[in-house]
Picture (cartoon, rainbow, N blue to C red):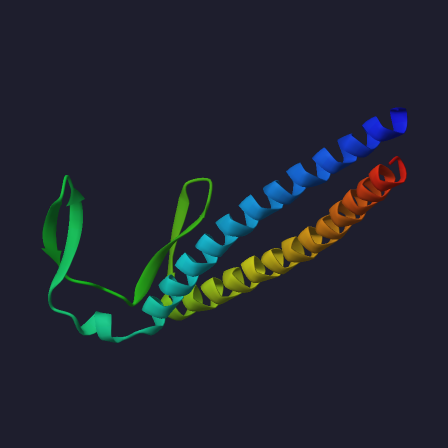
Amino acid sequence: MAGENELVEQIEYLKNLLETIDSRMNLLLKTLEESNDTLALLKDTDYEKSKDVKISIGSGLFSKAALDTSKIIVPVGSGVFIEEEKEKTIKRMEENIQSLQDTYNNLLKQKQSAQNNYDALMYSVQRAQEGNR
């Protein structure tokens, strides 16, 4: 009986772990997508030539503006921002994207390992149930 309870607890733990990993992977995918879109915009020089730039000022209102794309204001943490050259920002974004991709790949490996363990436990339970018949 104690062995069955441990098995059930392990199965529940792995099931919850798989759900947590899935949530983190989905969040990472959204962040990766946004980061890739931002990087593509930074590399695209067509938007710099646009004369018709509108900036949201809130409540659905916009103001016309001129863009200065030579420097980008970048968050560095704790509510602190710095101004840096566009090329440096592009390099920073590429590094961030690579880090996000590495994290995603690590989560994928963790998920595969947890899924294999979960499947093995479920197989053991099924075999035990068949043996009890």
